[in-house]
Length: 489
Ligand code: NAD
Image (cartoon, rainbow, N blue to C red; front, side, top):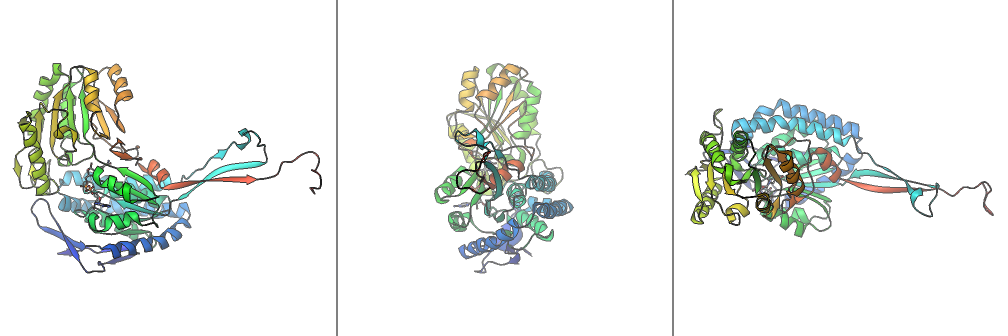
């Protein structure tokens, strides 16, 4: 069995307590590897190492940081296949999906490396302030925050770790990464690429442990200046209560909608929903959870959608033909199955799917869902799409904006009028016209409104949030044709 140590202060080591955690496959329960189960003492040691790392790294010029990051990007690409295998083994997503995730990872590091070399400031037109002349010059400089705490979820264990680690390092911060307890192996695998690329000791640590054991102590640590968290809204709220005076980026939960207007291309909409509702077994923050359709096209839309959903082949995620793998655990599959049953008890109807086999849940389409029900309102994070009708734009927008979340949304229409109105009125961090909310280019700004979070990821935005701006004013003296009384010139 593989024993994977964690990374603290440049050393690959066990937990100080010696405790270990088995990482098991959600598909068959096989033990994939063991990792240390870090305690609060390990968490503290990682932050202490990061204090040293932060000093070394902020004194490392941007061109040198970029060189190391570009080397790490190349190593991630060289190791993409083993990283993909690791993702599938620990997470249960299909090998096809894992290869896409691993395949995007190197390029993401490259993008971040580039942004870290562009820490521009601004000159300030101080003479525009009444009473100020040309004797002063003002400008801003950016500097790294110091120590960044990155806390990541299970669903994209490599990519979402890199969306934090790469911009943080590119901007000159040291990082303590706490990956999800169920999927630490991919995070350790990508961290090894930075170490092998020559990152100095202490600049990156990866602490493998449980959020409810080491989360609070890390979050409250005053030596940390910036927390970048991706995960559930509940944990995000807890972090914001415990963090104290720190910069916070929170990428949280969602219940993402799609609107089908009467003039939509229904075939395109059905294909897109069949992809965007079930990728990663619905465990994507931007998964299509709700479809709000005009009643005139609802029947035709469902006729197009259901066969496509039924064609999604579930099974062993390691097999190349499997299109949908497992949920992260059997308990999660049971939770989603239960949520579907509750929706049915509330008057909804299952058109297809919903049967469970261990941690695999057949992809489901559920119609007639009450928009006010928990099935619509709470994040589902599973392979089911809730469909409801809205007779006009006003009732559609009320449904779309009628949850606590606001991460991403999709609108299908062939009319620019509907598109413009949606862009203006939908409260979501991303809006996709003629696609579903589940679409991301790693370079774009990405982050939610309302309960879906605070701040943006995407290398350019993450680098901005992981640096601090200082205002500098050079105070000269007013100069005049004649020296002032008593002044030597
Ligand atoms: P989670 O909130 O259970 O866990 C996320 C991370 O937080 C894990 O590393 C966990 O160990 C840690 N954690 C738990 N308790 C903590 C505490 N008290 N202090 C500090 N850290 C703690 O989320 P999950 O189940 O791993 O992931 C699914 C969630 O992530 C969903 O809600 C999903 O929408 C969200 N997500 C959001 C985005 C986005 O970009 N908005 C992207 C992916 C996932």
